[in-house]
Length: 473
Ligand code: C2O
Ligand code: CU
Ligand code: CU
Image (cartoon, rainbow, N blue to C red):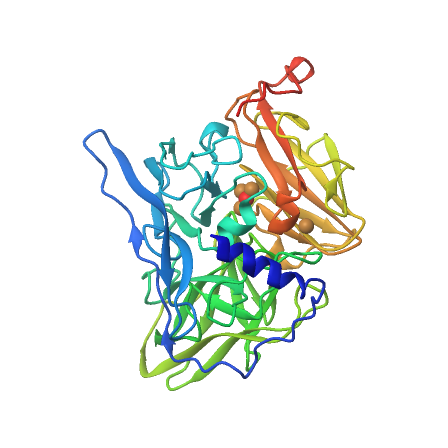
């Protein structure tokens, strides 16, 4: 632990140096891509699926031949891929074996606020937290990570994160053989000290911007493609880095899903920007005997700071045929536009001129409401996330969003000096005393207090809902 602190101090010298050049061409891709194991327990006699998760410390070979102190869930770095179907009753036993308190938040799950795993559901060191809920949302790539107030950046950076896949019965012919043609891709940047430990340099406007990128914790990963189409579930699990994903040969690929589930139809792109917290599912096509790099290209914001090689794909001499890409994927109704408009002005690291106060309720929302949230960013880039909801991007500075941003989402990149309007659909879990969060998913900003709280109340009771919570330890 003290070494983490020393590394942080050493990193201060580099603070403010944000134009990292990238790694393109400097990494040889020879390590098989690590695929996190799936955890999908069979239900107990009472019909509940019980998942056991242990937050723990460990050691990982993040750089070849070097050992780094890391954190993980049921392992040394990252966690298993959790899986559940719509309608499943799930119970998580989250045991915190770390020597500090933490939480585990289900990012993208639609569930009661007391189960959300935000800063109000702290898990003390040594304790076990047992949230339980019924999964009730369309198929989607969601994820989980800690959310302790003021400490999210180091906890996620050290390795606490994993995917949580929701399945449903919609019959869509997309590649779905996990680890074969349906591949989790957790993208995280890192900085290393000379002896291969994680360098926790959270200085600068955005906090940590690493010069090495790991995929599922793998340095220099290579994946063997055996089918003509592969679905990649992209998750930007980085503290701050924004990526502009594409293939080295500029081939077109299709976005099939965003944070909250399937798009109406596949959206063809060559470049795909993904900011911290966001997920996109893409389907790419391959021919036999190819070698192609998945990359991130320098973009137009200062958190897409260079060209990075991410993952090498080597295709077999003979590929098994995949089903054709469906023309339509889901019935994505147009956004319902609600009467109520709320504006959130992002300035520096504050929202509407305020920092997070864990005892203050910022917004009181009637359960089941449809509202328009205007994210008005007056300074530098942010990634705006709302817990519990599904939203649609209505427009970006008055212009229609590109096709791949028209599906269900919970996190959106908001470039500097830009206004994004969202049509937000809230859930129905009433609890006037337990808030959900909305915040910037650049973890340094979140930790600095760029976060607010809303509660869902019985419609009509907004005016007499308390705006302060009794402060608890
Ligand atoms: Cu991914 Cu409030 O978090
Ligand atoms: Cu979340
Ligand atoms: Cu931010």
